[in-house]
Every structure is written in C-alpha cells, then in structure tokens.
Image (cartoon, rainbow, N blue to C red; front, side, top):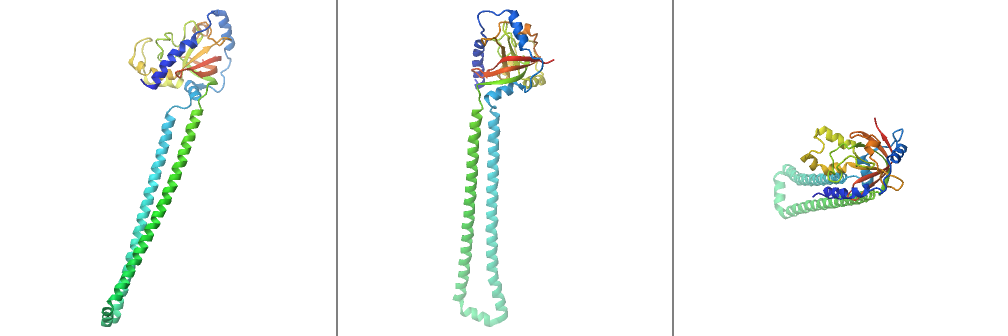
Length: 316
C-alpha cells in the first residue's frame, strides 16, 4: 500500500465527521436564504485551482526535490569536467617540460658536433684526453633536468591541491544552499488559508464510493466536491468514459490520484456546520459545471482538502 493510499483511507474516515451537521434540521427556506446571500454577482479575482490551493497549504509535491537533486547532479558533472580539464592541462604541461628537456639535451650535442668540425683531430684528441670532465658535465646536465622535472611535478601537484580545495568549498556551499531550500519547503505548510478556488463539480470518477455514494453531492447537505480543472482535462484527453456506478479497473487504479485532485466544499451555518439542505436542488448545480468559491481552506487528516465557503459564483 502506497503512502498516498494510506492517506486516502484516513481521509475517507475523516470526511463523515466533517459532514455531520447539527441534529436540529434547518428548513429549506432558511438554507435557501443563506445560499442566496452567499451567491456572488461577479467572479472574484485571484482564483486558484484545487491543486494550487493544496500546494499553497502543503507545499510543492516531491517532483520539486527531484529537480533539485538533478541540478546538483549537473553541478557535480561540471566539476568532474573541470577536474578532467585540469588533469589534461597538467599532462600538457608535463609534455612541454619534457620537450624543453629534449631541446636542452640536443643543444650540447649540436655544440659538440660543431666543435669537432672546427678543430678536427685536435678536438677529438682533446676530448679523449679529458673524458672524466665530459662525463661530469653530462651528469650535471642530467641532474639539472631531473631537478626541473621534480619542480614542475611539485608545481602541478600544488595547483591540483588548490583546485580540489576550491571544488570542496563549492560543494560545501551547494550543500548549505540545499539545506536552506529544504527548510523553506518545510516551512511552507500552513493550517488554514483564505482562498478563491476554481473547480469542476464532480469531473472525476467517485474516489469515495463506499462513504460518498451520491458524489459529487451529499444527500441532505450543502456540500459539493470540486475537482481540479487541469486534472479533469487530462482525463478527458485520455478518453476514459463509462456509465456512472460501473466498476472500472482503471478508475480503481487511479482513485488515489482523483482524491488528491478533489476538494470538499461546505456551505456552513453560524455554528460552522454544513447546512441541512440538498445543495444540488437549492443551487441547481450539475456535474461538469465550473464553480468558483471563496472561503477558508484547510487540510484534514489524510491530506483531504476542505473549503468552508463564504461565497460562490457559478460560471455560465
């Protein structure tokens, strides 16, 4: 059972508590008068969809974290490329030093050739007479070349250590930034929120068939279930349709998603309880209509979204 399925089960248990009104029934006339006062002549500004209201209360979904992780992975790849380029630069530098050494080794040989050509047998006899001095001179050249190679190698290692230090500082800064973002994300959760919410009456297969058989209405109560318009549009594009009440494996598999995209709207009395009157009859609402409600939104146990409406506007 997925976490969302568990939350949906908890939400189903929480809904009947929110639908239980006062034991004394309010007359249809009183409910009709109250609904008339709640009806708005113009659509209020700042409308948000059902899912937008949910995210405003609970924060963005998990996809935001995955994107953040993806950004970090891209940064790590960039750092790896920098390391590779740095290593390549060290390799080129070592090759240049090697070339310089080869040139230095070639130059004395050329000088000796010219010297031999100019002095002929005398030069050769002179070199033969002082072989030890020549060997010492060659050994000194070799030691000097080795010293230069060691110095170049130490210089490359020093630069590489500084580069690693810079990368470590960069990674540390990214880590602190990630902690800050997660703290802001956790802080985004709210208890209640005044909203103007736009939703479709019904619009999705009943996600609560056992507890709300009259979905999207509640018999004898001023309650209606609104679905997120974007989610409804996606379902219509898929072309999934069947008769009301018909068992469907597809709907059962996506019941959790449907419940996530649905909000329960209550029209309440002064005591904060839903009016004991059939909203479908009083407000002449029909499934598929777009309803705009103004009120206070909150999240119930199980992440069920509920809005206590203080006004409504029915789009044509």
